[in-house]
Length: 363
Image (cartoon, rainbow, N blue to C red; front, side, top):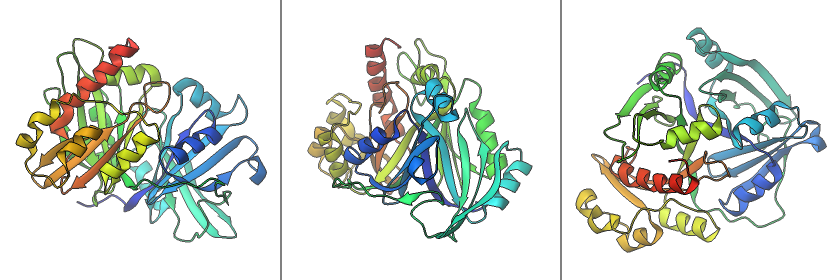
C-alpha cells in the first residue's frame, strides 16, 4: 500500500471540554496520564486554556474556553465534551495539506510555521466528518514539550501510568447514507485503503443494527472505522450518539495495552465504569477462540472479551461514556497477533449497549 503522503502515527487528539482543569485531573487520576504542558492566560493565551497529557505514545490535549462567545464554548454547548482534532504526525505538513486539498479536502487552516526558543513546527488542518478536523503536524525541528506557545508543566500529585501504549484506532459515527461518502474521502484524499467491511448482518441484535467500514493508511498506524446506522426495530447506538452529539463525530478511541488485565484492574479500581456482558459469555468462548495465554477466570472476573482471526487473538473491553452525554467512550485492546476488530464479540457487545440505552430511555 502506498500512502498519498507518509503518516508516521497519531500526533495528538484534542478534546474541546467545559472545564479543562478538571478534565485533566480526571485523565491523570483515572487513566494514568501525566501532565506535560500547558497553555493559558499565564502564557499569553487570553481566551482558552489547554492541558497536554501523555502516556507512552498517546497525547491528549484538553482545551476549554474562558469566554462564553468563543468557538470552543459554542462547540461544547452543541456537542458536549468531545473530540475536535485528530492530529496526524507527518514529514511535511505543507505538502500533505496541498495534496489533500488538491484531492478534494476542504481546508480549515493553511500551513503555518510556529516557533519559539525550542525550534519550529509546521501545522495545517482540513475538515473531515461533522466538525472534526485533521491537523497535519511536522515537528522534526522542535524539541519543546509539545508545541510553540505551550510551557512544560508537571502535576504536583503523583500519577501512576496503567500501561496504555498507543492509539490503536479511532471510530467515527456518521449519518445514514454518509459512510461510503467518508470512506471514499479517505481513499481519494488520504490514499487510505479499505481494510474491512461489516454490514448489518455482522453487527446486529434483535432490535438494532449498524454498518461499518474500516480504512487504514499504508503502515497501518492509522485506522479509522466509520459507522452509520442501519434499519432496526429500535433506535441504534449510532442514532443515539448522533442525537446527543448533534452531528457526526468521534464515537470511541481504542487504546492498546500489553497487559489488559493490569490495565483494566487499575481502571476499575480508579472508578471507570465498563459495559458488561453476561457471565454465560465465558461458558463457550474458548470453543470459539481456542487456546489463549491468559487466565479465563481473570478475564471473566474483569469481563474482558476475547476474539480470534487468522493471525492471532485479541482481548478487548469498552468503557461506558466518560461524560454525561452518551457519546465518547474508550476501548482497551490487547492484540496477540490479531489485526481484526472483535467481530465475534459484536452481538454480546451491542446487547450490552442496548441495556444501557434502555436505562437511559433511548432504545
